[in-house]
Structure formats: C-alpha cells, structure tokens
Image (cartoon, rainbow, N blue to C red; front, side, top):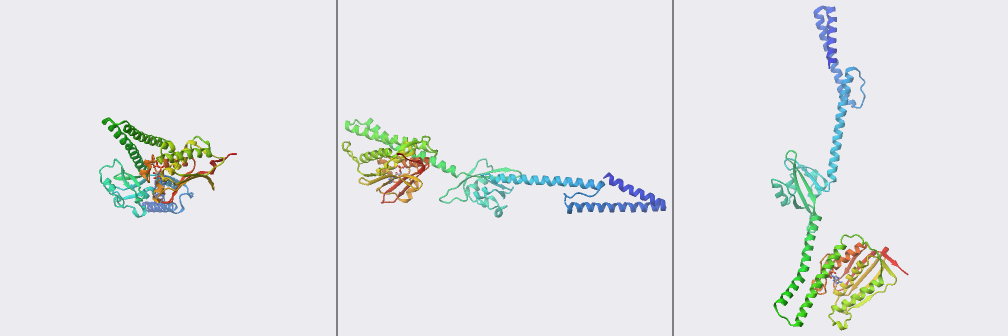
Length: 443
Ligand code: ADP
C-alpha cells in the first residue's frame, strides 16, 4: 500500500516540478492534477486486470506481472487457494460424517426448531416410511401417525424411549421400534429409531416359556399335593393307599421327565456341533430303539405285566454294516423320540415302519406310522417347545411337549434337519436328514 501511495505522490511531485518549470504555478497544478489522474487510471486498469485474472484465468495460472502487483496477486492467490482447500476439507468431512450416520444400524432423523424433517438416513426412512425428497420440511408428527409417538412427542422432556409399531408392520409381521428424541443446537431435535423386533420377540418367547414350564409343573404338583392332603386327612385302607402312592409316583415321574427334557434342550440349544464324534453302529442303535418301542407299545396298551406283548405292527428295515459319525446319546434320543411318538400317537393295531437310507447327498432316517395324521396348519409349529396337537394324548402317554424340539436341535447340531410329512387320516412320516459325509460303510 505504501508503495502505491509513494508512487502516486512521486508522479504528482515530478509532474508539478515539470509543470512549474514550463509554465509557473498554474502549470505545476495542471501537471500535478494530470499526473494524479493518469495514476488513478493506471490503478483502475491494473485492478481491472487483477479482477479479470481472478475471475477468468483461474487461481492455478501463474501471474506474469512484476513489482507490487505481483505481490498483491500472489497474496490473494494464496489466500483463495487456502480458502478453497479448507472448503474442500470441510465438504469431505461432512460427507464422511453423513456416510458414518448412513452406516449406522439405527435410524437418525434431524429435525429443525419446528420439528420439521431436515435430513434422515436410509434406516430412519425405512423405519418410519419416510421419503426425504417428498417429506423434506414436513412436520414429523404429521408423518408418524402412531398415537404413542404423538403422546411421546407432546411430553415436555424425552428422557426415556417410546416403543411404537414400525411402518412396515402388518398383522402377520409385527415390527417394534424404539424411538427417542434428543435436543441439540438452538431448539433442534435428533430423533433416533432402533428396531427392537427381535428383542421383543425373544422377550415374549421367554415369557411364554416360563409360563409353559410353570403350567407343566403346576399340574402334577397340584395332583400330588391333593393326594398328600387326602392321605393326611383320611385314614385309608392299605390297597387304596397303595393306589394313591402309585398315582403320586406317576406324577413325580412326569415332573422328572419334564426336568430331564428341559435340561437336555438347554444343553442342545445354541446349535454348536457336538464335541464328541462317536462311530455309531446303526444296526446296534436300531436294535435298542426297536426293543424300547415294542416295550412301550405293550405298556401303553395297559396289559398285565405278566404277558407284555406289543400291540402295533413293527417293520424296521435291516441295515448291514452302516455306521454314522455323531454324538451317540443325541442321535439315540432323536431317533427314539420319533419312534416313541409313532407308538404313542398310533392306535393299537397300527403299523410303524422305520428305515435308514441314502438319497442324493443325504443320509436319512424316517419313521412312518398309520396313525391319525396331523393337519397341515400344525406342521410348521410342531417342533416349537410345548406345542401339542393332541394335548390329552400327549399327557396320557407321558409326553412333555419337548420331544420334537430336542429332535430338531439334534438334527441341526449334526448339520441336518427334521422333516415332517403328514395328512389327516393318512398317518405321518418324520425324517432326519443328515449330510452323507456322516455315513461310514464298514466291512
Ligand atoms: P409330546 O411329548 O407331546 O409328544 P413332541 O414334541 O414329541 O411332544 O410332539 C409334539 C406334538 O406333535 C405332539 O403333542 C403330537 O400332538 C404331535 N405328534 C408328534 N408325533 C406324532 C405322530 N407320529 N402322529 C401324530 N401326532 C404327532
């Protein structure tokens, strides 16, 4: 700046001296004024050139001037380049920040001071059914119509979360969202949404499970305590006393089987493959299963213990030299569950066929019965814990409602699955399907 002022005065003084020498005082004034005007014009021209360079040629072109104008140009250029870099950095950081919020598994919705939507990530849009193009600057309460949300929004403070139905919820698909408002900036609000459907389902399952177990245990307990009270209150004949004790023993056995099945199930749940890998001889395993099934058939028919004989027709296909790799106790319990179910649910005189076979890449075990069959609507739920089609038949025959749940877990832990085919009136076929790699053919 000093250089320009110095230059201006130098021009004026030199011109004044020249004017004074040529034409006296008037000449000095006229020359000084002319020189000052010329200098101002020169300044205007140079400024204009600088402006043009800044606007048109771009900051990256080198300046071809010299002296103070080069200095000015270079400083402006440096400042502008720094500003441009800072803006780019800011934009990049904003982009990274928005990408991070986009990647969040939770929904994030930014609301302005009047609770109008300014921005939301994709998850938030899906959770609340928003379209940011369409719903930009729309009031959140006009779009989230759940009355629970309206009530929550109207509260003075939002220290706790509220649970609302997700936008995609239907009668068959229940989606639960946890939502919470957080104040920030000048009257702005951040709305966070979280899908808690799985947690809510797990919670409901846990509640159902506790209720089911309590119910299953309460029934035999009530029966037993009834007998105990009677025996305490009334003097009984010896044979009646024995009958009561026998009935109490049945109830105690029922509770024992329930607890045993619950323990088995809790060990199997989690789906990890079993640690032990036995070489299970299938002919030997089936020999044991068949004799247990025949004994069960005889016991359930209510015959005298003297002359027990099975009341079902059994057809167990012979298998020679077949072994499979797996946990013997688990495979035995799965196969026994299926065979004993066939015995328990098939009326006396019915047929029960069991066989092992290979099909495509699978090693299969199946048991078919000529029992009453199961209606299609029950099939998908049969392996749920405590799900029963025929409740009274299950109880009468000592069922716990956990057999198929255990069987399904055993199959899954061995890389296989449980398949059920049945038609009312046409019997049922339950199959365990394992990968063929578990089969060993021994000499
Ligand atoms: P439970 O101890 O009650 O037998 P399961 O889990 O083994 O429990 O079986 C669940 C339900 O599936 C049974 O209560 C019964 O209603 C039905 N079920 C199982 N196997 C058969 C079968 N072979 N025939 C008809 N119904 C069956």
